Length: 88
Ligand SMILES: [Zn+2]
Image (tube, protein in one colour):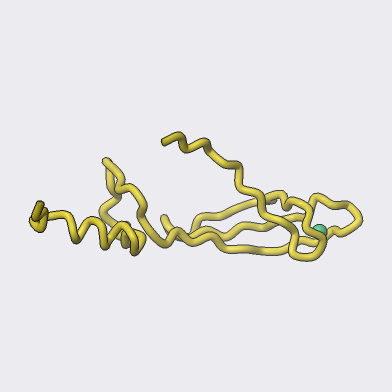
């Protein structure tokens, strides 16, 4: 299992070029707002987006007590089906 980090690319909603993050501000540990700017000089779009962390895929070893994120549904099913019902 190799999980090569992917550099996320967010395309401009108008021209499709990559956006550049001008600034981002964390409002809560799981919610952040960012100002994006289109890299295409002919376009010039600028806008705001919000990034919300919604689920846990792998739990933290040093969890923040004020953060509680549900597991992604697929994993929750896996975790809940694990405990004792190994009948084989
Ligand atoms: Zn654009």
